[in-house]
Image (cartoon, rainbow, N blue to C red):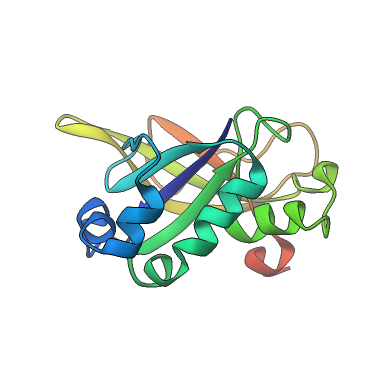
Length: 155
């Protein structure tokens, strides 16, 4: 199953904003909604194409309320996510699966006492071998790796 995770803008309650609007609520109605991170919403879809299609259906809301739209496709990586742009490029065969792992945005994960962990500022890194540089923007309990396009990376 392909997962989609929407990380809300810090200024809004993402779940409220999406479910209070009929079009977004209808698009999400068939999914089991989870909150893996603070102010996030995650669902499982049947394929990468379905994940990208859902993101396209929610585009108006993503522009207004979402900081990051992430897709995890197990055939590409069991642990790393793809940005929306990279997921779309893979679906459209504009990028080969094997060419997705060079440019990364690494989020820090901070545990909280009163709810799911929180994603904190991403650090852009380039993978040059089997490992990536350590997250050093602040003390964190874990990291979340997101593969991004060269354009998103600024390369």
